[in-house]
Image (cartoon, rainbow, N blue to C red):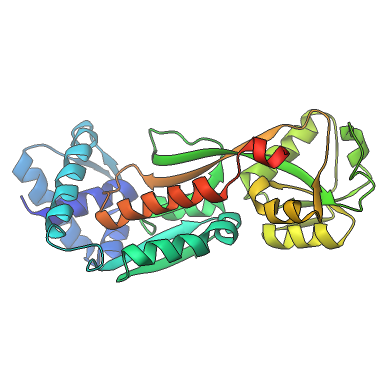
Length: 305
């Protein structure tokens, strides 16, 4: 049984498309088809149903995935058996939402590069939904996102940490020292929301609507860093993950508003496609990223202090 055929099987299972899998692996569509036929002949079962242009896993195909992952993973580890982390090569395709990039990427890349100096990092910064789509297409190895907890049946999630979504304003804002701000009082204020691709921003909007509060956003943007700077320098209110404003809160330029009934959280997650093979390079990423997130992302109690 050829290892490359198992790689190809896992790529097709992930993308559910022979042509796209071929592009990702550098094979023609006919080459991919030949490899899958060879693998099906070897194990004696049909792995995919071809219905028009659609490719769907059969029951045998779904059951075969963990075996293929295990064999490919062992093959990767055998290939690196006599090589130290300093000698490993390759490219790691990482996706990261902007807020985590701004907060955590610099210390992460510093530590990861110490362990794997010859690994090339190809970084994509985008919203959670866009990163998930790139994962489905097999264009990312791993992604760091912020969202509601994802279904474990669709994604591998080796790391998850709940973080607070906080309402913030600058220390000179009229609400800065006010206790028990009602949701109705937000209506006439200048609000900065993140774009709707940010799940936590969408959740805040849904919460306000459920409470009968209609707020027209003055600004909608992608950059949490810019939102924090605007709040620091202007008469704005925004709703952001607590870790994005931690430094400004510690410096006293931004305060967390005491808004009644506001208690929003999201989960920072490291995710991989369910069919992804964990190589030593990816395993090292997971270890270093989890360590950095544990250090750099405050718990809710630290934010509220």
